Length: 305
Image (cartoon, rainbow, N blue to C red):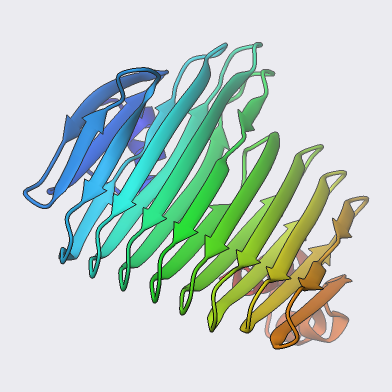
């Protein structure tokens, strides 16, 4: 792999080389390398682009890395991935997409991921998006995520987009059965004229299901962000939606949290806040010898951790 490809792997999956264990690499719309392990089986779909990842019941302390990179201008990639997490399994899945576009045509990756999480299973899913390149062509990423959680399962999803993506639309739907717990942490920064929209629908359908949705974002320059999370309680359940944003320059942010209760014991809370960087924090860092730009960067990095 060349330096550009290795740099993108580092950015989106913290990889410096091909890892051990289950692994799938997709490049410029084609599967490049794929490897299963004893307990995690990766198979190509027969009817459309994408893969099926099956984690055997009881699998513990194993991981799957499945990065996607685009290195050419004009590539439009659509992929369908299904994940089947067996009962009592406990696994980490690291995904993400990096686009290097140095041309004048748009490069786009649209991923449709469906997660089927078995009883008592635990999944941590990390997805990072990154764009780079000196070309005028857009870098576009549109992920669609569906999560189906069986009884007493747990899922933590961390989605990160910090720089370089011109346009993104993220659609997430989750359906939770009894005792299932879902945690979603979304971290986002936009700049220039970038646009980022995030839509979530979380249905808590079983007794004692719970969900925590946290969005932290920073909008700079003339960028635009819209965050629209919806938590729907259809049984005795708990959910908390929190949206915190820092707005700078001439950016625009809309946060539209929505909660709905269809059961008398549904306990659902939402919070939303948009504001500028705290002047007292800036002054404090400047008295310690930091420039205004350095102080802003420190505050933003801490906010997005």
